[in-house]
Length: 434
Picture 1: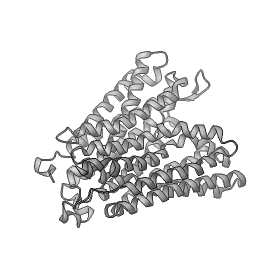
Picture 2: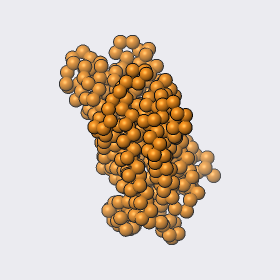
Picture 3: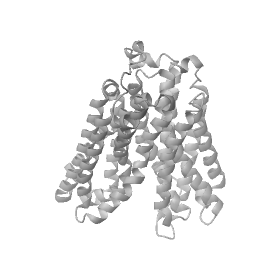
Picture 4: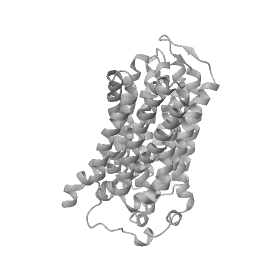
């Protein structure tokens, strides 16, 4: 009973405090142009800060997973300090760049937003996950989905707040915003750090496994099984980023330029809803991998429909095609989120709870590499095919280029479905009770 009474305070609330803070990394598009303008560099040059942040998120999770495994209090404190320090440092270098117009400002932003915040992101993302699964043993998917939904919902919550700050803080509002939010997020994350606790009296169920190396744990199942999980995760993120990075321009192609903000918010809700809904749904399934099959099948169907109808090229003025394109955007966002929330529970089903934080951390390296490939490959396709034109609102769009991105994503989704079917093998009942 005590366990039931305390699980929200000891696990769910601190997880949301941590994930709703670090999830604001996805608000980058709100202020990236303002940073570029203020420090006197191109938007393309500043964009690398975000790519570095995602890369170091995955890499720090991979290399610091053992720290999380051994001591969630140390790892959550590292997360709070690094995330807040990185945000404050970013604010300082924006301020410095506005007055000096120096390359040092850009390098400082790369280090602070990319590397230091990236370490905070990776450790903060991992820290509450195992604890949640321990408190919510019977609904592990619901628990991890709740936290990871916080990461996805952070953009929808923080974006209007950040925009209001930029509009009302006057000259230098961009660096003032970072300095203020550094304090706010440190308080939130430090509170989460203090509250986060494992269940009292809980002992590692697998003493033997606990002493094994990660590779030894992975080898308890056929090695192709883990490779399959890693590849599924990587492909799902790559395809998600390829489409999501072009989302605003695709919406403009189908004649909804005036509704970009609303659609962006709705897609963020689908992203967060997919994280919670797909993981909670997976709790009811005998084989959690089934949820990935559903994600990939739905993504293939909607991508195929938009490809066959030329929805992005021909959507303007055609309500059916507009609905199909919006359906694709929402389904991909939901599947992108659902892929994240189901990874830790899928890994725990296959490999047990003994080293789940370290194993989850290594698997998040897929996120790091997808962060460097997904949107960049999509940009390459858009810039290399079709031609740019002006829409009725004066926006420069390339409907053919955006349509051609779908040829890449449908092939990758089909490959991911085949991996889910043939490489990630179903668990027998004994294995699932590990």
